[in-house]
Structure formats: C-alpha cells, structure tokens
Amino acid sequence: MSKSIEVKDLNIYYSDFLAVRGVSMSVAPRSITAMIGPSGCGKSTVLRSMNRMHEVIPGAYCEGHVLLDGEDIYGSSVDPVNVRRQIGMVFQRPNPFPTMSIYDNVIAGLKLQGRTRKSETDEIVERSLRGANLWDEVKDRLGKPGSGLSGGQQQRLCIARAIAVEPDVLLMDEPCSALDPISTLAIEDLMQELKEKYTIVIVTHNMQQAARVSDMTGFFNLKATGEPGELVEYDDTKKIFSNPSNKRTEDYISGRFG
Image (cartoon, rainbow, N blue to C red; front, side):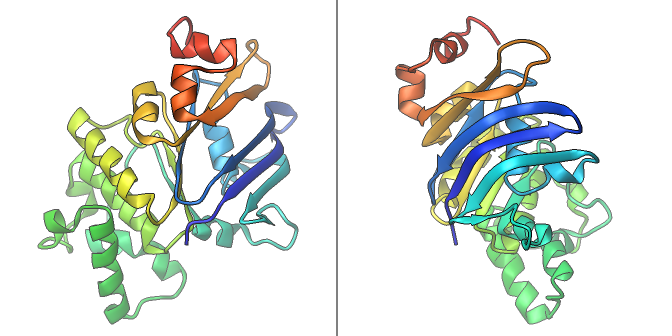
C-alpha cells in the first residue's frame, strides 16, 4: 500500500487540442502533493490522467508515461479498471450514490469486485468509515441514505468509499471547494492522517490549503489563452511559498495575477 507515481513527458489531448504539454514530476509514497494554478491551466486534467480517467472523455488521450512504482499505467497490457482500483479518486463535489444507504455506498467498489460476503463487508465498512473519521457519526444509521448526510459528511463518505477497496494512491480534485470552513478543516486533518497509509495528490485553488497540507507543490500555468498548460515549477512546498525559483510562480503566489 502507498506507492510512488512518476510522470514523464506527459502530453494530454482533447482530440486534436493539446491541453497540457510536457509534464514531468515525481510523487513519493506517503506524501501529499498539491497542484495549484489559475483556472484552465490543466491541473485537473493532469490529475485525471494519473488514473486514466481522462481517457473516459471521447477523443481524449495521452502521450508519455505515468509510472506507478515503476509500472506504466498506460502500458498496452494494463487494465484501466484495475488502475482505477489502485489509484482512487475523490471529486470536487461530494457524490454519494443517492439511492444507496451509507453502508452500500462504502461497499460499492467491493460489489464490482464480487466481494459481497457480509462478514467481510461489515469489517471493511467499519474500517473505512473509521479511516474517514466518520464512523462515530453514522454507526447507528448505516441503513439510511448517504444523501441525507451534511456536505462535509458526504465528502468523508466518498473518501471512505475510495479507501474501502484499499488503493495505493488517492487523487483529490478540489475536495473542499464545496464545503464550509469547519468541514474543510476536518478534511485537511483527515488528509494528514491518510498520508500515513496512502500517497495523496490534491488539486486546489486554495493556496493556503496547499501550504498547510502538502509536502510538495506543483504550479501550473499557461503562457496565453489557447496555449497548452504546463508545469512551471515543482518543489518542496515550503520553498515554493517562500522562495520560488520561477518569477511566474512568485507572481502567482504573491497575487499579482490569477
């Protein structure tokens, strides 16, 4: 559990349009990496490429390599479904399955794997909900719909669903953007606990959040409208926010643009 990710010379396309160009970055196991930058610069596109979610979009594809502990997830013999089991994803807005109970939301991925033995699922539900710091709040209403929870609770339910299948990596696409400050703090605290077991990559528009939670930060930008996005700078978070190497990074961090 918890593996490294290495992105090498990644070009990402939507049909003929080159959306992101030449991304290379290494993500260490049991760390949190934040991707920051203005809207439209390709952060979420890169994130979705890390577990082959990008190619679900018609006409979308990648050139280059994404290595999970040295194995290229875009290799010809690699099953994308298995990749997405190993590299889980939590989206911007909480998306529990509305007609499912809290219990069934957590085990949704297990059912796809044919793991339905109740003694096993009971244990996994409790472990996953505890892992998402949600067990004590919902243990007496596991049969109630997940959609009945608050926004922050729903997002933690989605995290529980993601970790129930025991992935190696967790990708989070602006997981706090739809949440109130108290729920945001709870998710940030949870990330720090989860990185003891998982490799985490997060996209965030909140630079303070990136500074608070991450070990490494990548700043993405594009040179002009219609140009491909690119990774301008990737370094230790403290260095990015105190002494960036690139003036474009410094201008963004200091609020001169974006």
